[in-house]
Image (cartoon, rainbow, N blue to C red; front, side):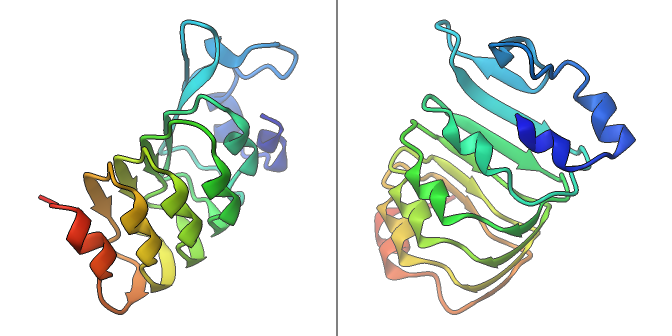
Length: 162
């Protein structure tokens, strides 16, 4: 988790005091959960000031099921490499940050995604039709952004959102 060294906010450092880079396995770190076999499955960081860009390092965990980086002051764009996750990612929550740019169409490659929350950022452009490829998607939250256009038919036709 070398991305933590990219900032030096004292409140953030305190929140991550259990994150010791010399540990071979981060399963005992705060905000991290692992499978029985010791693979990182959940990263849940909420309401901690991380004034940095999206940490692409978190995309390297092959068994990641939950990625929540909400209300963390993340900046920059959502990387297109997010679609390269070979994991069974079911929840992606990047809400309440300062992310910019467009929603990468590569999110549509996350076939097991059940919840996608990108609300309360500064995202622009249209909602990519590729999100309709997320056949398991049950919850889609995109409010409070600067998105334009209509919801693509590919999303509406395949989903029954509540």
